[in-house]
Length: 386
Image (cartoon, rainbow, N blue to C red; front, side, top):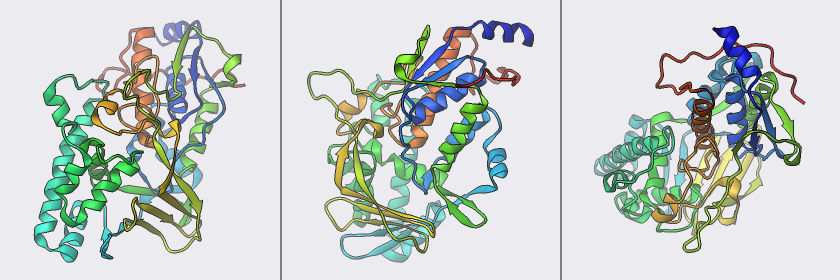
């Protein structure tokens, strides 16, 4: 059976993944591991992976489904994933709030600074956002569903704005409003959905890479992914040098709309700063947040007061209607413009959804994690990547 499957895939037409983006790299690695011949086209797009990052599970799933699991790759590198430092929020009134990722840590920190009532208020708010995150997982992050029903849109908090959500947060309102800037918009009409990032951090934490107790850049993960593409025999080519019967477009694009057309996400100006004691500091005293990420090896300042539009960061979620215009990943497309957003983990998930759909269309096999009967094919010597 394995031999027959191998012969079938050896005769399979080339799949061209257009766009050397993070979504494109993830899709190409997964497709190649499933046995498809793959060509990845375009110039590499510099990934936006910060030294402190969320949802490492998306990276673990990618490496597990494309070859050696991530823990093995990190052992080979002599590296490890550890918790990042807590985030220090400098609020407009001068209050400094050191906010850990954990549920209990957040409760204690807020109670110490603002009292028990506000701590309980924050807990209820983020608990509600846990439900929003669960809805997003069903509608674009881990499943390609579309929120057609009114109840589904309410579950995603598309019926309220980020300002409405911030009104529930009391003195922590700036922390909520900052989520819109982090998602790529300066609009106060951004859907309440964008505040789900607070749930993601509390649920999964924030992480960093280290080796010999020294910090590694977050882009180390894409270096490992580049090597994975080589191991899987993915061919690299210019856009005009590859043709295939099947194409997967992983270049983010704006929907073709005449009215209320979405715009590219707003990316902050990034400047280098002096390394030093590890810190994640968000300054909320200006019109928009300024975030400083610092380790002993490097530091970067992300100034959301000075932004520029860029599709590499996805589509700006300026309001609920524009969010709903985002294209759902399928057998033909995946990118930072997907409903999950422009975060690195979201790009990885969009690539996974596209691969599941494309592989099923080509082979009839369901490779989704929900199909417990599906088994990855044996790894064989890949075609030589050029």
